Amino acid sequence: MSGKHGKAAAATQRYAEDSSMGGVRNAARPGVFLKVVWVVVIVVCAVITVFSLHRLYLHHSRSRHSMTSYTNDAVAQDFPSVTLCNVNPVVSPDRLSEGDPPAARRRRAEYGMLTLSQFLQDYKMRKTNSHSEEDNRHLRHEYQTLVDQLSDQEREDAGHDLELMLSHCQLGDVPCDYRNFTRFYHHTFGNCFIFVADPRHLRVTKAGPQHGLTVELDTQSQEYTTQDEPGFVIVAHGSRDTVFPAEEGVFVPEGNAAYIALTKAERTRVTNTNCNGEDIGRDRSNIYAVDTRWRYSQRGCQHGCLQREVFRQCGCCDMDLPCPASFLDPTRRHTTSTTATTTTTPTSTTTSTTTTTTTRPTTPFIVGRRLMQERTAPASDPVQRCRPGHAEERCLRDVIRAYANGALPCQKECVPRCSVTTYSTRFSMSGLTSENQPDIIDPLERADGQTGGGLGFRRRRQVPEGDVLDYLLAGENVQVRVHVYFEDLRCDVTETVESSDWVQVMADIGGITSLWLGLSVLGVLEVVHLLVQLLLLGCGSMCGGGTRLTPVKPMAPASTFA
Image 1 (cartoon, one colour):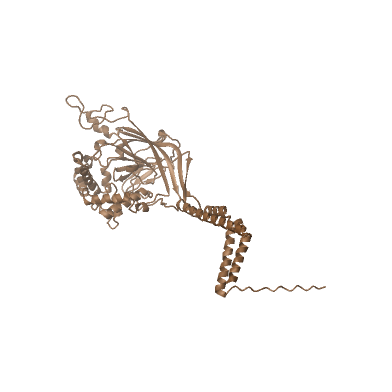
Image 2: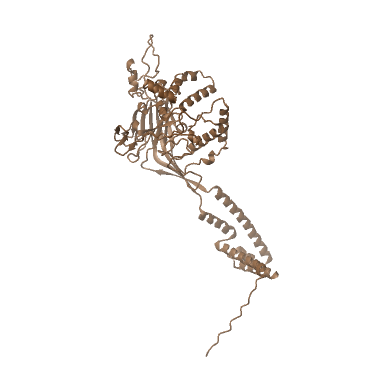
């Protein structure tokens, strides 16, 4: 046993004398005092090294990524998509009752349109007489229940028509019209319309209102039913991004000109981080996905997760979110109705049916088309909304509270996109001058000569009594003007990258060990060699009864021939 210990001590002594670390060599020199001092120094430095390596590990595990921001000065930018929504989702009951009386009444009675028309006739009176918030919630629940019973086509027919609202459209010096907008249905605002410029034919090379999109709109406030403040909601966004008018939109009230200045911003995350890299394709987690072109949306995923949890726990839907039946309950029967699409070319766009073919004029914009929407359930089998003043409403509040506190899995399931393009907005607004306000007042006068009566619009010019309707339908009633433009052609880029890779980590480790111990890769190999020698010595005594050294006989000197 003493022989084995002696061999181990000899191997350690040889390592200390030949080590590349100066502190170990000093500890191997003769002299007890120097040995003790250097051993203490080595131990202290080793403790500091271990502590520093632990801190380094925590830093790299918690801060694996860093953020870099810079500005890209561009000479041209693709103009973003612009969505506009009239805040009134349904028009007056008179419009809903138009059409062939027998056939229209039968069809609308079957799908609930006639019931909705009758409900809207006294909606405002009932809302005025509502003296509590609970009464307003009951009224809204009744309205939402009727709307849920309508088919997609009936919902569109119940909303405003852009052809009647849009009186002027221009991007830069190129004119546009209602056919350059795409219509989709929003659960709060009804019909919304997306303007998409074709980047192959038109890019913005200058900043300022005169080089952006200008639209003049009629609010059609004479047909308002559920809203008291006429106006439009405007949103600028990417061409394939999910639109959130209620959360991100800018409200432009009637009688005003709005200037919306945009600055483009891009944010990119590394793909191995907790982000979603989906780009194109129908997103099954997005409750707002009505078109296959729309990308994954973190907010849409969160809203869908919340609505699905409300349906699972309460058996009903939140009135503030869409309520598609097949999204919430895949076992429900569903049908799919796909609307005809339009084929777009750089020179012409042709829409074909089985009987007629219509050729639209040449335009540098993408011609609007109805989005392909999926009917998530038959109109006769919608998911019920949570009833106010009922146990369902209390259950809804509990789920929303749990969602706000992070108790639901929505935050974990719905991660941000790996690449996001946004448009920061600076908004200013001014009232239209009397010369630019084509609104009129009711030209009827009472017997005392004072104005009074029904329409309640301001007058731009005198309109004869019999021409009021023709004047309104002529498209001259401009009540909102919107300018959407780039404030600057720069793009603010933010990139999230890995703060360090394995090469950097190894360099940090080497810096710490070299600073405190003078240890390099060669020094590590020397330590490994010593440990292997000690391991062989210990294993040799247990496996073979000890290490036997066979002396080597010296060779006899060679004979010398004369």
